[in-house]
Length: 546
Image 1 (cartoon, one colour):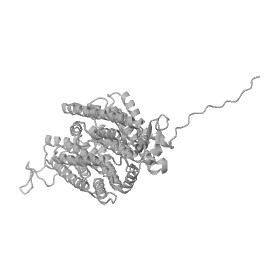
Image 2 (cartoon, one colour; image 1 turned 90 degrees about the vertical axis):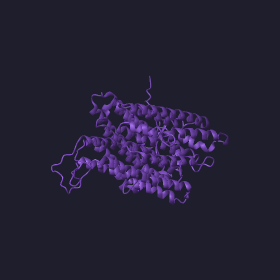
Image 3 (cartoon, helix red, strand yellow; image 1 turned 45 degrees about the horizontal axis):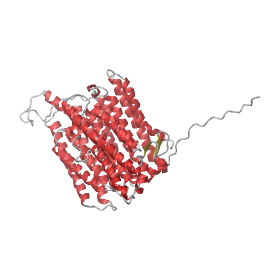
Image 4 (spheres, one colour; image 1 turned 135 degrees about the vertical axis):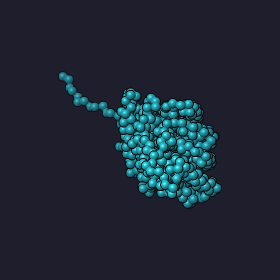
C-alpha cells in the first residue's frame, strides 16, 4: 500500500460520519443540518481532489492506489482501488454534491424528514461504487445508493411523486435481482468476485465455460444498463426525475453515470482488446444500444415543452452518447467521451437546478402586473398587453437568471464557445480521424445523431427560453436566494473552468482512456499490494531469579 492509500477511504467514511451526525440533529434545527451537509460535501470534494492529484502525479505502480480494508491480500480481502477513472468520477461527484447541497439549504429539507442524512448516504453509495474493487461490494454500494435514493425520490408530498417513486423502486428492485443472478453465475464460473482476479482469470476460462461467462456478464450488463437509462430500459427515468424535488433531480444525474461507469469498468477488465477468445464481447450490442438511446433522447428533448422534461431527456442523450462512444473501441473516442461526461454532468445538473427558479419566475410574472410611470406614446412599439417594449427595465435577478439559462442551453446543446461544444467536437474528431478504427456505417450514424441531438436540444431550449423569459415581459423581481444562485454558479463555474483548462483535462482523459484499454496495471497494482505488518511482540529483558 502506498503512503497515500489510506486517503481512499475518506470519500466513503466522511459522508457516513456526516449522516450519523445529521441523524442526531433534530429536524427543528435545519440550519445546523444544512451547514453540516454543506461542510461534509466540501470535505468530500477536497478528499477527491487530493486523490486525483495523487494518481495524476504518481508514476508506476503508485499511480493506482489500493487500500486493503481488512488488511487481507487480494483476492481474499476487500480492496478499494483509486485509479485515474475512479478519481475523476469522485471529483465529479464532489462538485455536484457541493452544488446540490447549497441549493438544498434554501429550504428543500423542510419538505420532509431526514433529507440531509439521506443526501450523505447517497453520496457514500456513489463514491463506494466508484472505489470498490470487488463485484459483491459493488452490489452492496449499489444498494446503499438505491436505498437512499428511494427516500429522496419520495421526499415531499404529492401523488405524482408517490406514483413515479413506486415505479422507480420496482424497476430498481428488478435491476438488483438481475445483479445478484449475474454475480452468482460469474462466481460459479470464476470462483471469485474480485475484479482484478476475474480479469486475470478470464483468459484461462475453457471454451466449455465461455457460454456461462458471457451469460453472467450479459445479465450483469442488463442491471447496469437499467441504471444507465439505456433504451429500451429507461422508461422509468423521465417520470422519476421530473417528479423529484429540484436538488434531488440534480443529484440523481450522477446515478446514471454509476451505471455507465460499471459497464465501462467491467467491459474493459473482462473483455479487453488483448483477450483473444472474448475480445470486446458485446461491443456491437452496446454500440447499437447507445445509438438507439441517443436517438430516443434527442426525439424526447424535441418533443418536450416543460423544462424539467427537457433536462430529463438530456440525461438520456448523455447516456446514449457515452455508451456509443465507448463502444466504438477507440481510445481517442473514449478520451473525448470522458471529457463529455464531466461537462454534461455539470450542465444537466445546473439545468435541473434552474427548473424551479424559472417556474417561480413565470408564476410571479403572472401574479404581478408591470407598472410604468408614463403612458405609452402613439409611436411606441407595444407588446400584447399594449405596454412599451423600448426602455423597459429588467431587474438584476431576471438578467442573471436569463444569462445562467443561456449558459446552460449552450452547454447542454453543445454550442460554442463553452465546454459542451469542445467535448462534442472532440468526439466527432475522434471517431472520424482514428486510423485504428476506420469510419463505418455506425460511425456515420453516431455523427448524424450527435449533430441532430445538438440541433433538437437547441430548438427545444430556445423555445423554452422564449416561453419563460420573452413571451411575458415586464418589470418584476423574482425572489432568488443567494444559496440558489451560488449552487448554479458552482456548476457553471466548473464548466467554465473546463473550457479554460480543456487541454490539460483532455490530456488527463486521454491517459485515462489509454490505461483503460490496457488494464494490466490495475491487476498488478491490486495483487502487488501487500498487507500491512501487524504489531510485533515487545521483547522484555530477561530477569535472572536467584
